[in-house]
Length: 285
Image (cartoon, rainbow, N blue to C red; front, side, top):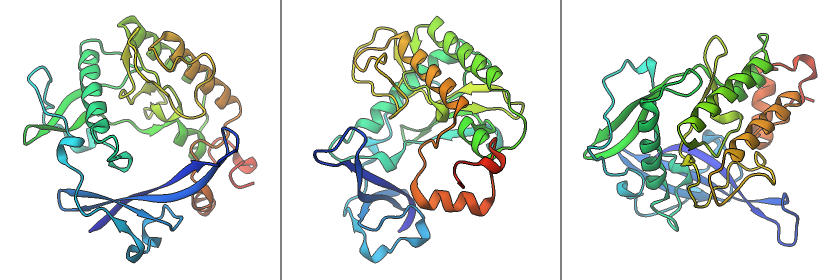
């Protein structure tokens, strides 16, 4: 089997505050051909070559295909044959697969496919362009989007070219307003759901949390990228306005975003990337 990814899983400290977490285990994704497996390790690392495979607790059965690939239906469009460098295929994030909620990934992908089908008829320069589904054996294997240059997180942390945050915020706002004009709430606006073109045009991506205006159901956004104005139970315009405010605050003082511990910090120092911070990089400090 080949290791594909590893993420650290944390748990709330009993009796602690809302932000008090402790390392629980490392969740690892492996594959053997077209079969995918989940494993756990008590070893704390996200660097694959450091993982001791002899210590892994590997599930004996592969993840069922139907749990992460929804059935294709004629209401959806298949993607044309595009040059690979022009297309980005969004795959289900199997690192998040949980056998206690086995159909969650399948439901997310089908919901996103239906939402982006709506967007195909209403294109906008600040919303990712969708091209259709990639279908394998009657199931949706991936969703095909135009490939963009880098995330907003990467632009701020690793790119030293001059950057205009005001223009970026205006373009994100225009993308949000466009979604709202066709009755769609994104529900997860944060720096990792914004891509930038080579000319720094901002483009909103990641539509698996989208709902139609007023639709009810559990929505949690991204940890630390919501506030008291965010409605967890109903898709409201305010949910996206909340995300935009948070990005504005972050661009004024870009604290680490999803920074994955000492190993990420070490890699950053070795690469000597300081983005917009120059010698005052908070990561290296």
